[in-house]
Image 1 (tube, rainbow, N blue to C red):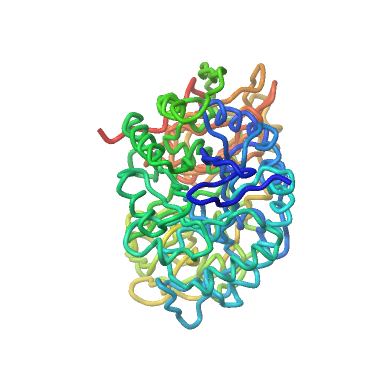
Image 2 (tube, rainbow, N blue to C red):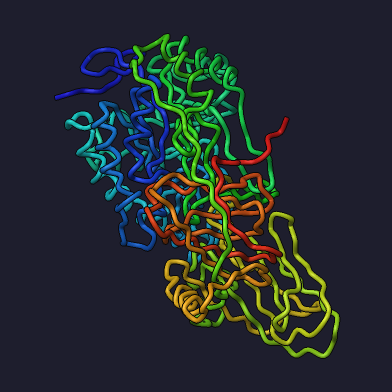
Length: 602
């Protein structure tokens, strides 16, 4: 039987020292058809291990329903790592951060009450205590872990698989210091058959390392600079045992309304070399960032709400589309000083197909409003809507012509209509609360969008939608109704689009967009290929390509193209479907020869 264990200051594989040279690839951010390619390129750079988080919210979208097909097939991903002759590290959370919606915690955990807004385990009555021993959290978390470990346990290296390390929690020292909670997760992990070494990760700052680990766990660090200083801090905490930076931040994520983040390849390579010269193991976060497909992007809120872009390129060694960057070659040179490199090297990307055209059919977003429910609470969560859009309406007595509408908090974007007229937009990103408008207001409708759940800090687990009270001209409005909009079932929209197309002898051209509207186009291609959809002339919305929800676009930038992976493309006719929520004068589509992730801060 193969063994992997701690021996003195080293990890040991079958009794021999083993330095972990790892890189992060999130299987859920990469099409399954591309896993083998990305893993292979990691080995060509000099890595011997692949690390991944596991997103609870995707695997269990509703309580008791487990999803592990397609891009969520964790077992197949671990098998692909083994097939490449590499090792694997699994980080199942239950909280993962990852700039992922809600930090991977499913929204249904908080349906009855939002999460505790606390640090260091100060709990509040009437709230769901997360990352704690409270049964409201631990019981569903236990069920989740058992399902994950049913996949991971038989794939440990001790049983002929690839998994050499499993992480307990994630940067817990930045959140709390309940060691009984960490011990319960450790005991559960062992009880589920995990026998490889267990780790924790925290920043080497303050007491985070001490608060976030246990004596029997391998404490590792997360940082991307000042490597010598931070490795020394790790050694201070643990005088013996392996040194490891299990999140070496080699880039950074992008948020809407900010610059595209990049880091200097030479500076990052220097820090990596410093780390390895100290004898440490490393996991590059990220080796390959991938894409926040669908509605999975997270958000940060430290007083300013900032949702992440659809691209999770991260300025990583391998870019969003799977091609090497200058950082790849700089890191490969450093790694070559510490390991034998393969002779093979990956090729560069060629230009993608360039096309342009018009949209040919349109249908209103309101076609998805099938059922109006009374609002006992103004949140989307209260009606089981944990992402996407919901439509609200309220009927009022109105005998004045000038109005102000005030909402205590919008989570996260609200388009307001009064008697069919668009009268304004309230943006959480701008801390908007009030709009003033002219005209009647007997029927107020508000389209609310969840732009990404907070993934870090005390606002994890907050509800989405409208947070009351809602005041019209200083007085509370009447009873509100809510219609959840199901983006997983677009059949009513597609039916309207088909009727419109079939009803025209000549294909109509859609140009001007006034209200939230679906528009569609057919794109002819000779063969499947990676594509880059130009969003520069659009406003704010979502894109589907052949039924695959690519993610969001936003005129705020920085991201100006959306990546369409070749597995989502077919030879011949392809369907492009766009939900545009803002007015656009001339709505056209275009494909560019390469990605445009936006301006950088120089």
